[in-house]
Length: 169
Image (tube, rainbow, N blue to C red):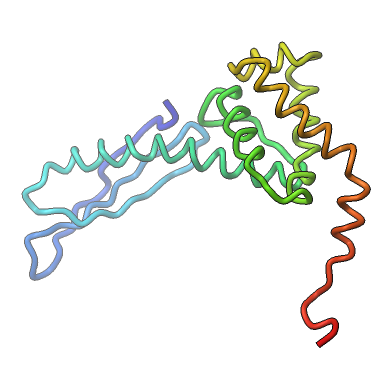
């Protein structure tokens, strides 16, 4: 559970309406405060709105964390999992990275992958076990990173020859 507390902060009547604006607030396990404003019927059960929002926020935090770690991977950075087990975050990020089609972009994630390998263990079996995936599937990931490492010089040389718009215009 990543949300450690939540509360209904304020209920304000919406003028000329049978609605109210709720101010909802939640604090996650990293002490970040999340705020949500909702317009609901004045006859609504306000705590239902709070419970519903917190439930969705819990799910959204997992997605946000994967997206943020994927962006960090592209610049060779990483952060330990904060909202989910480390293995779940690693598996989701690797799944996202394996969907990258552009070789230069994929290559930019190589240092994140190298860090992952050294952090998890000395062999592919340990890494597959950490991720909770079959070793054959992990081998596909490792193989792709091995292949991109082999062609790194060519990929970077090719990327350096891309023209900006209008060179011959």
